[in-house]
Structure formats: structure tokens, C-alpha cells
Image (cartoon, rainbow, N blue to C red; front, side, top):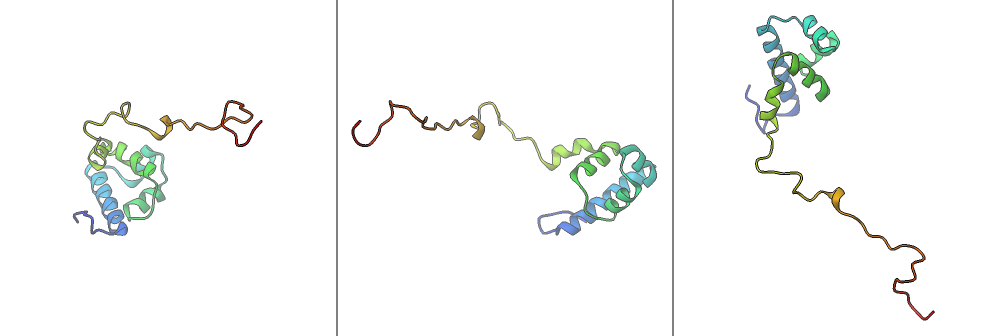
Length: 111
């Protein structure tokens, strides 16, 4: 199945699980072998291959063992020409607050 913007989340999960299963089998690994190499449980491997909910961390662990982790660059490409050091970050903006008991600040009325 081709994954596209019309695919539901469930369809995408099923397809990712199917592709993981095919890749695992192509590499001659059993579900048990994959579980041992990733540190995930056999049940987790089975659930993922059957399109059940899982964490992104688990998917990354599996992709690493299946020699597919570099494909994440295709999933979310690095922005071209973007330099984080030149961009304005919210954390770089400083809020200036009026200090309490500062006599140099404007005050209503006379002193």
C-alpha cells in the first residue's frame, strides 16, 4: 500500500508494521531475534508488526537493527539553508520587567 495524505493513522500503522515484518524476514531475523537485538519484548514486536500503537522510540530501535535508521532523513528532511544560530528563538527574547521600588521610573502624582 502506498502511504499518502489520505491514509488513516490506522492504515499507516498497519503498513509500517507490514514493512517492518518484510524487512525483518528479508534479513533472516525472527521476531525473537529482533526483540533480543532491540531490547523490546516479543509481544511489542508482534504488536508493532500488527499495526498496534507504539512509541516512536520503539520504532527507532527497530529501524536501527534493520539498518533503516538513516531513512528518518527522508521522513523529516533537514531544512535547507536554515541556520538555527541566525534565527530568532523565543528563548533569545528577553522580557524587561519594571523593578519594584525603582525611584527612576515614572510615577503618577507628586512626591
